[in-house]
Image (cartoon, rainbow, N blue to C red):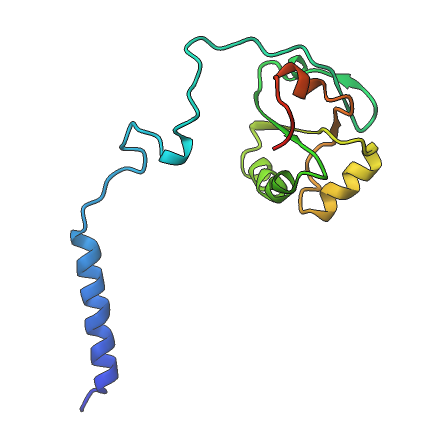
Length: 150
């Protein structure tokens, strides 16, 4: 019985690829202690700073602060509907929220929209599972010395 030449070539190609992958040296993803060049400007403080006691509200109008989440790992994200890069990252933040339920995502809108409008905006942009938090007086931006977004 004669084999088809295409099948023989395919088997040889798979065997060659497997052999090549087997002999390629591997190293851990985080083997280097140097951050990627894109993160070179991010230098951690030698001594962590206290978090500003800034008030913001949830979709029910309840005043909160970051102290509300004491004892939790928190990712604070400041965003606004008019900030294109902020809006672009909303689905990724939502995905992170689903993937790491032990991480508390506090995505605070720095816009002037109501809680209802902000909730609708989040849903329309693939982030409807994020809790609505509002900082319409820009207290976070002032506390962190930020001049705007992003």
